[in-house]
Image (cartoon, rainbow over all chains, first blue to last red; front, side, top):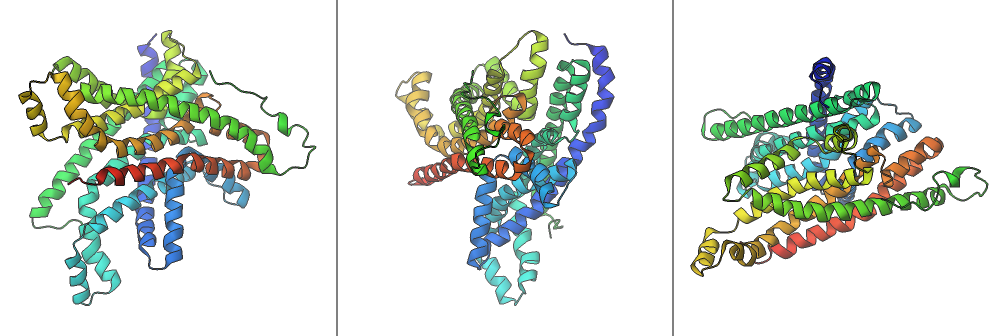
Length: 225
Length: 234
């Protein structure tokens, strides 16, 4: 049954790995944000082959399990001379998987920018870089910020998977404690509670961000630009 | 619970017959594929039922039912699938309830995706205009009749594409059960990897392709549903 002594004994050990879970989430999300933007652009390319290959890549990655993709990065790439640490492999693997989701989010945002804005950019003789940086992207990203926030939370809940490629994050640590002491109840329950707290606070954060951006919408400052 | 017809590493013992690597790997992955598909179907059915239970429960007029379903849905959505899987497999036996790995896998998958599904059900029901309920009340329908004959048939159309997406997510989620020793496709691949390490690239390439072959028809079907049910909508 549940032992509080044991709970308090293992709590510091689990807290030690909390930051690994958090930093893996943030790093993987950053990879997904950048990767998603690249994929969204490549998909829009007028160069047919690039657009088609990107489409195929997105479909393939989205349909296959992230766990298997992590195995490929962690166990197959070293055979071709690319050995990555569990953390790096995990961040890249999760990041790439979710970049395919975020590319769709970017696409929806870009499609929602009214035609007149594109025409205005052309009429003002903006270079493509200026057009995207100052006109299209700031307007495309704002409405999809809540969706992106949700993907951050989804990715947080995917990080326990990284224990399968030997990264000692929250769940990995809980498993180690379990196999050393034969007590799995407390560590795994605690990990569940940690995730509940983490994902709840992350969702509060996303709601706050959403509200703030709406206020900005009517206000003076333009944070996204 | 899952039947296996051959022994694990039989095919790789001697390596006498010089057939291609893929021909060696494929049969074993195929065995795992049957387990993956069994898991997928059983968890989908159970998860589908739980979605309605949770979704309708959260809209109940009776407070305790609403609170309990709300608690379960938020709890299952807030913790992570793999953590739930490990909890059922490693922690629950210490409370005296020992589940077979297959049962723990199906339970975790259907509870987790059922929780996401119940949000789909709830959202779809709430998207039905109030006038529909009012008309049903005017026709003197009981609450149950309102739900079954007026609300759900309309809401169901809205739910289908989202359920399709969840079904694909569920397929990808089944790979996680390999970590609690269920011999699904990913488990077979991992087992083969430790045995014939030299063929790791072939094993995982074939594994990815097999997931794609199972999953892509589901993606196409979901797109079709999206188009089919967006016709004639506002």
